[in-house]
Amino acid sequence: MLLSTNWVAFLLLVVVAGCSAGQQTKSYDPFTVLVGKWGKTSGQDTCEANPASINFSPDLKEMRMSWGQPIEMYDRQKVSELIYDVVGNDDNGILLRMHGETRRVGGAGIVRWFIRMPNENQFYWQTEGASPQVFGPYIKCIT
Image 1 (spheres, rainbow, N blue to C red):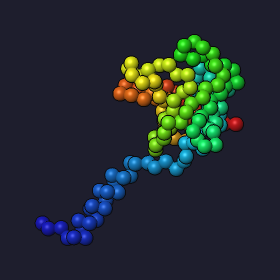
Image 2 (cartoon, one colour):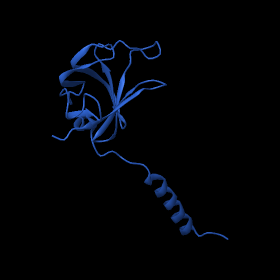
Image 3 (cartoon, rainbow, N blue to C red):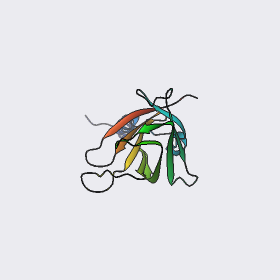
Image 4 (cartoon, helix red, strand yellow):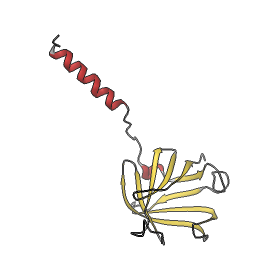
């Protein structure tokens, strides 16, 4: 049985539409959405206990993350502010390098961090590299 040209075109349209239906486009700018207060879903740094404030420099080359009460870092040092250089960004998030970072990826370069945003009210930290570590989630605090 031969299919008409119109029928083949219709089937092709259905297949293409079906393939693209699962893809979601982000309708937000992470540099804009990230500005504000964020908290972990549990532990000491929740929205209620000690939320983090995120701000970017006007040129978007630097991100500052600060807390009302100091937090304990990986090396047990307590800090109330972290500063990051913005290295790049794509549709999946922002790539950052933390000032003073000493940890290395597999003995190579200094660890760089992605902020990955599955939606505009949540983000995860993810290390760069072949075996990334993921931390989070952080949720947008309702003010």
